[in-house]
Image (cartoon, rainbow, N blue to C red; front, side, top):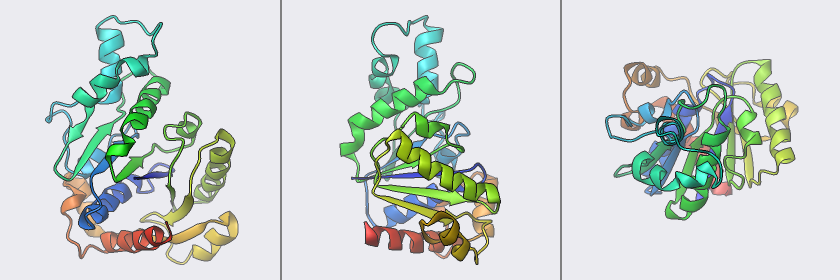
Length: 255
């Protein structure tokens, strides 16, 4: 089992990268897969063709809200994240033929994601052995790192955008990961769809991290995302999918 975490600033193409990475692994027969949408924007499910509401599934935050607000439950005593663990598997886990998926969601006490993140962490600890790969789509920024959603991972991808702030984000993220004690085997920087193709030398100079390539800018991917169509259905000839395949070929060969 390998856990792969994708992070980066907002708008760099993290969710589409995770969806295309899932397509790559499904094509290689590297299943079962678990996809984890830890981003409150909840883009990943749509990008892989899943409508959680239509499937009768709830996000972790919705389950917490239902348990401790709508039903008047208490957060005193047994840790709330432990108390709803069975509900996560029964009511939150979407089970498909090629992958399973659950999402943290957005509905909880305003401004607070500590409890949903804690529930996600406990859920991951109890299920990891059931999957060959776990792909986690992280929210933008660094706050989630302090809560250690996943504290022992195999591969971290930081997806960069075309700005100086993305370089600063990579340096801060790498430092924070070390400070909070997240264990990882490999850390890679990749360029998002808008990242300059010729910036690899700058990435190496300013981050000292491995850079296996860029996600190609692809009108076909943009059209799928705009229409709400699954990226798993995009043709294998897609330039973005081929670029992700090249990145994964390199990374997995070194793992």
